[in-house]
Every structure is written in C-alpha cells, then in structure tokens.
Length: 85
Image (cartoon, rainbow, N blue to C red; front, side, top):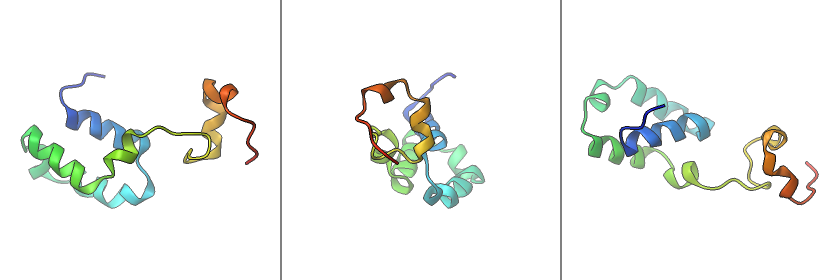
C-alpha cells in the first residue's frame, strides 16, 4: 500500500481500528465529493474533527483490545499476563 499523505494514513487507521461509533462519519466521508476533492490539509482537519485520532493511533493493551479474539492472533500475547476473559 502506498502512502501519499497523513490523511491517507488516517483513513487506513479508521478502516482497521475504527469502531461502530465511526460508522455514520465513514459513510458521510465516503459519499462526499467535497472531501475527496479537498486539499490534504482540509482532509486532515476534517478527519481530526470527526474521528478520535488519539484512539486510532493509540496502543492496544491486553485490557483494551476491542475484541477478545484479537488476542489469539497477536504474537505478543505471550508477554502479557495471564488474563481471563
């Protein structure tokens, strides 16, 4: 995957780490010709306004995984304390 700008990275993070709360904003952006034709700075500002960028780029821990099944796919799970789900 090529990366042309920060908004591209942000969009990727939304796809991979977004939550159900982001659904409506994703739909609006996907259908917005104004967003797709905007400059990179405007795209970045729009994404920062409508999405929790800190959460998108934040680190997951054993306690904050969005689903318990992701833990079984992570190689680092062996380093985590034995937590019962």
